[in-house]
Length: 267
Image (cartoon, rainbow, N blue to C red; front, side, top):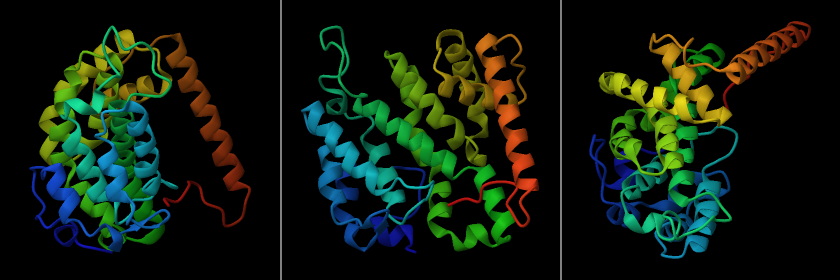
């Protein structure tokens, strides 16, 4: 467990630190990751800004792999998330990956991968996960899980970096930005942005066939009190019915197992 100020040298703030200052001032080797400690993270994170998209892809594998395992927020997760948010506006991060002359790439564009990771991490830290944790581990769950609390506190700063990408020229980037912004907007300071996000969700639902993105957008619209009947298509309805059957089957199997969980505990 570490305090954000000791990790980054800066206090918690809505403003993002400069990515290079963050890289240099963080004691990465002292921070826990999924593979031990984060001494290899500075090299991997710096590689995300390499001009070569192949190098960037390998760097993303290395950096994100250190802080991705079983829905866990690690000590290194917060400074990694801050660094990623701080480089989202760097032009070099998309060099050779977008535009009419670039052609198809053998991997997801770096910018999309980083937004997807921010999205997954934000969902791992959302209110539902906290509620599940408190049911299983008591009301002090969030106080004890300091890494999770630190990430949740920084959602406005991360959102400030994601929001400009909601209008990106590339649809994959726009959609990845939206799925990242939705869980970040649970923060009380960001509720005023939900109407804007709902507009972007409507746009996604009018154009995208991606199941994951559509589910995220539809869930957000419902949570924010918007009707979705006119936005759902036949695939959405079939998916919703399938999810309901799976939940019912899971609940039935858990009820037949003495002492079993009725829901998966957070990791």
